[in-house]
Every structure is written in structure tokens, then in C-alpha cells.
Length: 140
Image 1: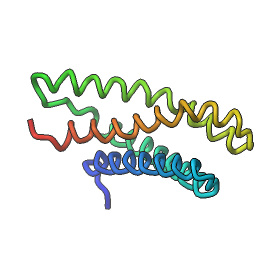
Image 2: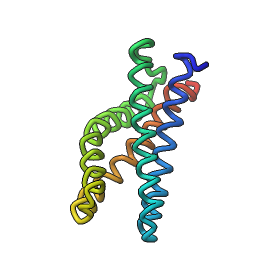
Image 3: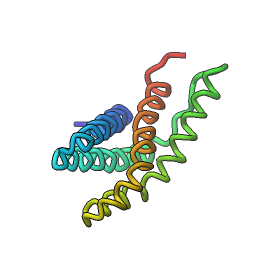
């Protein structure tokens, strides 16, 4: 059984999984393997949705955790965290629009927004793992 204290680790895993699937999805579409691209992108979206559910549950029960680092690492951490949060909020509607356009087979408009959605979503996935490592794994 997973406890509340396990959720940050699960969240980092889901963020990492989403990032890997985004990169794979990009590689598959470049090779014109549309079905495999679709599976990867839906997998990345599913991992992100599961992350969001787990994240809300964790913070509902555990609250926030203060960053323990001091010195130069503190502004680095907060720069990553703030950019991560801002882009995480922005990526939700962008991902929904991008997926919706693909679902409707409006591929020209899908490609236009996907060019922006992919790098932002990938940054959110990677920076989420970095925030986790800095908050829970690195000893200061």
C-alpha cells in the first residue's frame, strides 16, 4: 500500500515517465510512425494526469515542504520552482488543445501548437524531477 510519504517519489516517477514518453513521441512522429506517436503522447498525458491527482492528494494531506538548502542553491531552486509552476499552469490548456486538435484530426493546427506545447511540457516534466531531487534527495 502506498502511503502519503511515498507520493513525492511517485510524482517524480510520473513526471519522468511523462518526459520520456514525450521525447519518444516526438521521435516517432519525426519517423512518421503516427500510431506509436499517439500511444506515447496519450501515455504522457495519462502520466501527467496521474501526477496531478497524486500531487493534489499529497499536498492536501501533507501540506508544503520547506526547501532546506542555503546559500547559492536557494535562488537556483526557487528559479526552477517558479518557472516550473508557471509553465505547469500554462501547459494544462495547451496540452488539452493540442490533444483535442489531434483527436479531431486537425493536424495542421495540431502541429502549430504542438511546436510550443512539447518543449514547455518537456521542461515541466524535467524540472519537476529536478525540484523533487532538490527538495527530497539532496542533503544540504
